Length: 198
Image 1 (tube, helix red, strand yellow):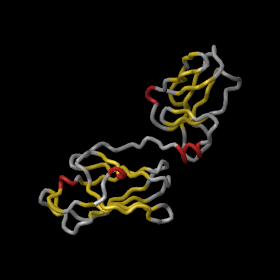
Image 2 (cartoon, rainbow, N blue to C red):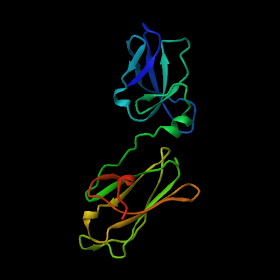
Image 3 (cartoon, one colour):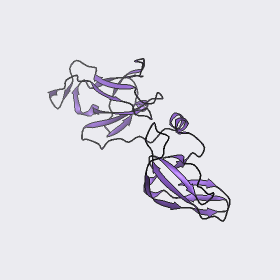
């Protein structure tokens, strides 16, 4: 829900528009205009199905022509703030993949933005799950514009031997900012920052 303070007694709408990361030009319309409801000078715009994600928004009904487009991230408006500032200061809601039985979607968040490399490798020499030797394959991902990446790793409860992961994070200059030994919880998802290092 977007809240906006403007003069009372107006009939106003907000039109969401697509956002392309790296572009300062609003894209095509997303859905229909959303009519505001007012209580004095506070106008409320219920975004409904559009609450998650990045959009441009154009407010109409206050001035002619309509005001310039402004950023909207996850149901919050940032009028007068450029996307570069929003991207640097307001974390987007990460999207975690659907769970896979016996696997944990590990969310790794950094403050380095896009392009950090995140990788995990089983640390033990003898890792056995369900009586099958598990290879030490490297699982890796790259952070998105919000600094988030997801690694899909085997839950610790699936192992009969071994099962510890060495997880590293390196920024785009290849400087390692995180190097930790952990076990995946027996849950479908987890945050790296919440895990206790071994």
